[in-house]
Length: 329
Image (tube, rainbow, N blue to C red; front, side):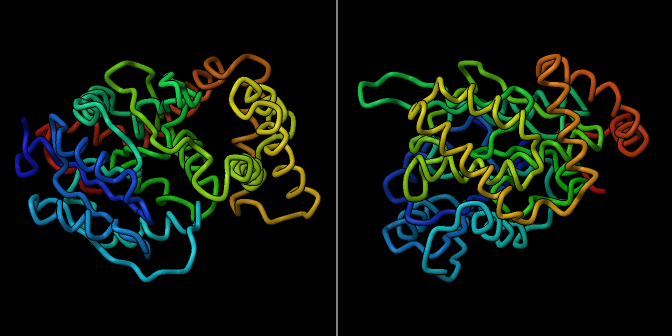
């Protein structure tokens, strides 16, 4: 097994967490069992009132690459803005230029052992691949393995694995609910590729199903609808997404909650993401996806934006360097 100290493990994990005592041991054990461990793992405790800090401290005492950073309690869980605020606390504790890759990692996951090894290998083989991930699944009470149905053109928010160069180029994450969609679109706008793969060695268990981490899963779906509005999603695309989500529990109610979140925000004229050019880019992609399918729309965008990436980042990709060395820009 590779260790954190060798030259081929130059990735950093940053994990915001709050009251995760029920899940965090599983995540800690699954990272420790990785075939290539991180160079550093910063876990930012965002005001936990349960045993989370004590559990992390226990593991940190045995593994010097695990670091615990306490953060003052804001009094509540804040999905979206609060998570990225805590992530930024961890990111400020490292120098990004010391690492080739960075990952925002949730601590309610069970990762397969070759997870990070495979992601790094694929990114090193494709210089334009800026962010990638595997696919999240959850288990029902009967033990059935259910996909959370994340698109192949996105890297999932639970394990946002980034090439540092790409992460810097997009300006990091937006502190709003749809941060984990906006980042992928911004990366594509700048000519990068984004992928996730539904393969056995990259499928991981989400111990708490997506959208259910605050209040309940219906609130999570409504929050997703609001996030789509904030991001600037086209209304027809949002409706199509809600129809697609009819295949996922809680079926009709979940889709209705998503539609409510979007159109209620529209009627209130809530603020949207401050980059109108990116909003137009997102809407153009979504309309192409409705007409030609997501896969074709992504291919068209990647072909069109390739010169953008080539002009800014291509010469770095051609420069010979050790595959395990950090990339500085």
